[in-house]
Length: 452
Ligand SMILES: [Zn+2]
Image (cartoon, rainbow, N blue to C red; front, top):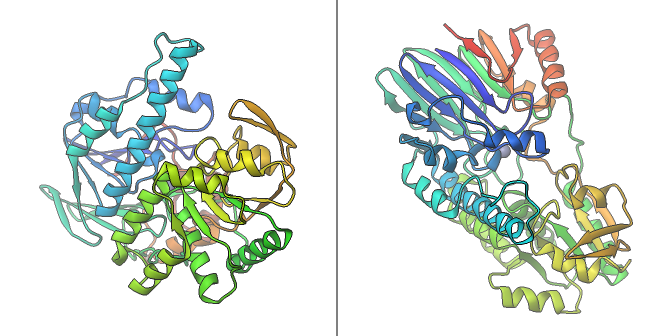
């Protein structure tokens, strides 16, 4: 068996690991490179092997940096099955369609104003490419022992990161390799806890926060204080929100506050077409969540999901106090811009940032205290109060990662760290070697590792 990291090594995006077992080729995840231009350009490189030679894709979860390259691989000749859990497939559909739509719109805009070097500018893939790729998906539930090829079995297990996310165990003639996938927090807010494995020969583990500890804060209390503070100022609370997981976590927190009668009498809205669709998927897969039917009913009552553009426009115009969760999470686009246009210039209002804000985004500019930001063709003075809660994270921190590894009763022969900036992976690697006394390597891009 050989493994080669074709992405998601020395970086957190573009996850793709090629596993070669005799004459079979598997790809664990098939993600897009995102972020800085140098990384995004890699999506346009020729794929290092002929996609038609890949037998199957195993997809850990629906985030774009794990699934976003699938339509292109299919367009270029991949004809195998793509295995994932049922909710991962549902969320992947939403995320890939949105990705293609954004690319098509950007190209249309580029071509109209002719500011691209490439004439005409083309998307990596279109909505129809995405729809075609859906034909190759097959779903497997957690814990199903599935025979992939002769003497090769796979199992998906909970990883506590987003709905449907999985760690994947591959068993080849009795030898096993576990891909952690993205691991969540030890005690996730609405998901079931991640699975701990006790035995394996090899591990490929993510290391996003390999050198970081998340602060232990009472998020519900902080959220309550911010809501109350904004209410007492007579303002609106605008929360730029990621559509998958973060939106549903916030809905859960608001329902908890409502249940405890702590919320002021103002409406709470989720105004994000993608967020509303994703929330519907969450509600359809209750058995994948650490929630019951009553929680779900209370969540439905606590936050109003805005489904039409007409209602959205009416809510934007409504002068009454409100709380709004709206996409996009980093203020790069989406309906949140309409709310900001109305509310960013008034100190009574609060903008609450609740997720990672990448460099170059408006969210980062707000976080760094810029007093003026440009959107919708104009500059806007930032007079609203900007606050952030950075304790909400979908990723395990260093202690969570070490804890996951400590559940192996016998040390794996080798641990490969992927999905991390180099300084995060390197420092986790040193920590693993010293505290767990095991072999550990930081995965290098395009390097072939011979396992046996
Ligand atoms: Zn992820």
